[in-house]
Image (cartoon, rainbow, N blue to C red; front, side, top):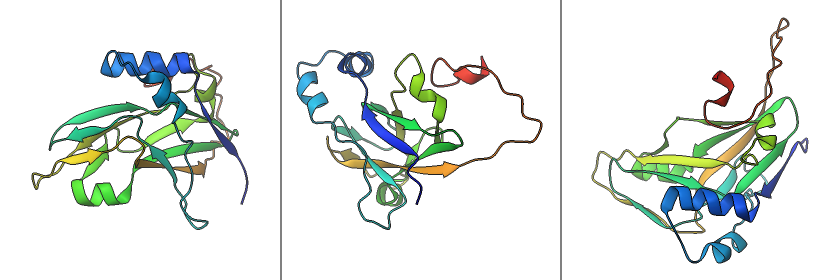
Length: 168
């Protein structure tokens, strides 16, 4: 297998800003930041790298949460990181990413937010089940995939931003 990427933490300043913007003030951000675990595969045969929650959340059916992961990924050109919910959470709660599949491009790493990966999920349960995700629990998974381009591709724009920044 090719080694084509590296997970890193974003800076504490970037993480603290994202957490405050998302959840308001918190007195334990330094401890939460210190405990961020880099994504990893559970077994040698796993395709997905587990992402771990930085907060404890309880999602009733229909509720949504955006979780700043504190993680960024340096990815070689020609590869992308695709994000999905952990299959067990999807199966039990219909937990879904709001954009169905998250796509992290290789040039997102150098963005103005340091390439900070956010994961926004909704409990779409139609069985009335509340989903609790504990801080430190694996809740999403990322799979690295190669991609190709067309022969006449002439993309030259430089990214600076995240969600929707390449269509501006």
